[in-house]
Image 1 (tube, rainbow, N blue to C red):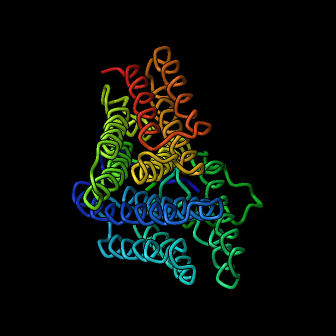
Image 2: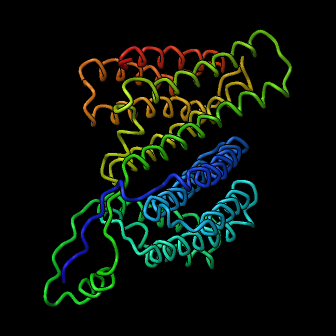
Length: 382
């Protein structure tokens, strides 16, 4: 059976849903702020593990909605996006980092969002040829369903298994060519018959790059919110002011590292043009790095002259170092000159990682981070 002809990306019109997508992104930012706050409230290894699962799950939920909107374009159902926004809000409000008794509500909201987006994608009359994530709503939810009857901490281990399954699908299946159905491959032949009447479309690189850009900016905004909120409710003295200013310097440097240089080589645009399994994987690591940095900055400004707790200092160092490496990887994989990029990036990442072993106070930790990011910025072409 012949496969539908791939439609050019330009034939889909995303202009009518730009504000709707931005409105949805605001709930994603709120979810990240809740997860980071939960980690700062009880910074230990157990809560860090839960944070990683919650953040990755929230990112997958956001990605599913982005890919649905990319597929549907002018056919996007407003009620689907609004319902997804409500479900993502429920996930944020039921974070077990704050109240463990709400954990099942978090799982139910994620399952509901996933099934709803899969159903919405099927109803568009289109299919993404290089992204099976939208259709993987059945088997991958099994760990989440089982977790409803399992007590903590086993529940969280099952959630982690679900995240690993999602990452495996993203890494192994996304971007692969559809294999030709064998005579005895009834399941694949049936799926092709179901898809025969649909338009086969590729990911819209420009739209995806824009969506990655917006959520990138919004997550950087969580650092700004942390700094401003803490400054508004704290007494000011010289060490405190110096620490907050260093935090703002880090925020500005993170922005310029991610958004300076030729537009075609800015990381979000480069990632939008890559295969989803490459571009989205790098994007996840970048967003997680920003969340780690936000947690570390929050801890540093809370005690400017006291040594930052080891775990939060590790998060700060790892967050800044991984951000540098992720940004450099995104630039280098899309044609940026690697010779001036990697030496400065490697040196800056090593300086950031030194925070892991240096028991320095908050003001010094942020000062070291500022210096390292400034060194890396020198290598970015204007």
